[in-house]
Length: 145
Image 1 (tube, rainbow, N blue to C red):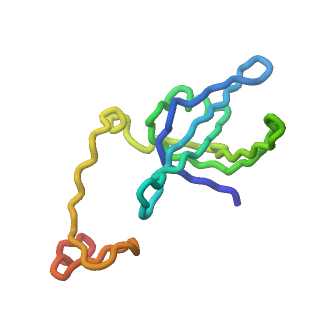
Image 2: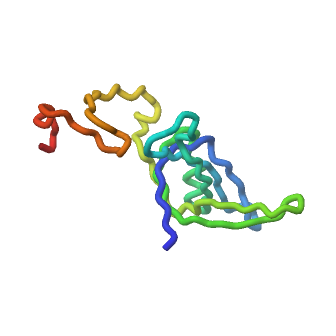
Image 3: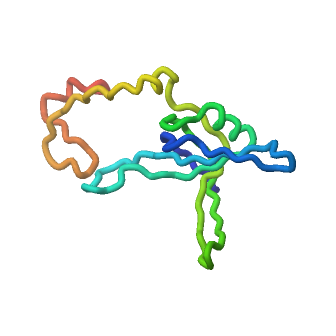
């Protein structure tokens, strides 16, 4: 099975190209910046930049509505290929977009307010495992208790 699902923001406006006998068909290319989860070392990249390509109605949608910074959810499949340039073989990997949709409201996208500060819970012990140790006495404050 070749299925890819991603959530991220466009790094730039989509590149739109036309093709076909009458240049009546569209193709759109864009890069999706998807955040990485987990602990980050200093200087380590915090996002992956995923090249995406779409055709037809999806390309029309991208041309009309997608702009740099737009947050979208994408489903598609991984497509690999290669070509020759200056005598060297270049390998490519793209996501062939099957569907996409907005992942935030228009109002939220236009406001882009700073995120509210998260309440900090004092930790007891090592948090490198991805789990937070809740000190005694705080359990009754948890919503799922």
